[in-house]
Amino acid sequence: MNYPGIIFDMDGTLVESFHAIHGSLAEAMKRIGLAPWDLETTKRHVGRGIEYLVGCAVGGEKKEEAIEIFRQDYSETCLARTFLLPSVAETLPVLKGSGRRLAVATNKSLAFTGKILDHLGVKVYFECVLGPESVARPKPFPDMIRAILKRIRLTEQECLYIGDMPLDVETAGRAGLDCVLMATGPYPAAALRREVSVPVLEDFSEIPRFLQERGSHG
Image (cartoon, rainbow, N blue to C red):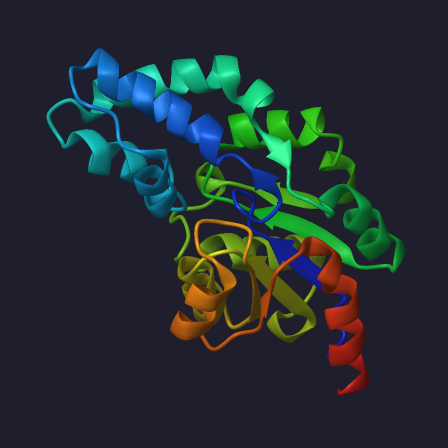
């Protein structure tokens, strides 16, 4: 299968956003009197949305206060602290130029997602960008993926999902899509290969060759 459609996760797949997220989480934790997490701990909790991340960090009692602080700080700092991952800028036009329909499914709020993708100059490549506000249930529930498939008019068999963590494999599996992981998020390639059975790539530039090889085999 050569996959006429590709749905991407965002954080750790398209963009290096962990330092931005960690900075805002640290600010929220300090302002409510908690010692901030280290960066690696933050990385391991990214992927399920702000509510989950902040809730794990501060507990239930001060969660809403901390979320408000996080959102304010992140709104002010995310553009300066978020960058495209290596080879993304060069590879997206290749994928788009091959006629594929590209989309983003992220648990990051759309208010931040759209601003970041536009600032980094890549929003134009995506036909559809959905976030947790777009559907009833966030990833790993399949709602976002199914909504995208409907919008880009492709079937589950025609679309590949690309993420960076085991949560993405679960998401793809629930939605009935094949999945590839990038070792560009919180987990190195060796750790991902021990944990999941899907292909793992180490650089975004490897995607076109992977698609070409997959197409030649079926």
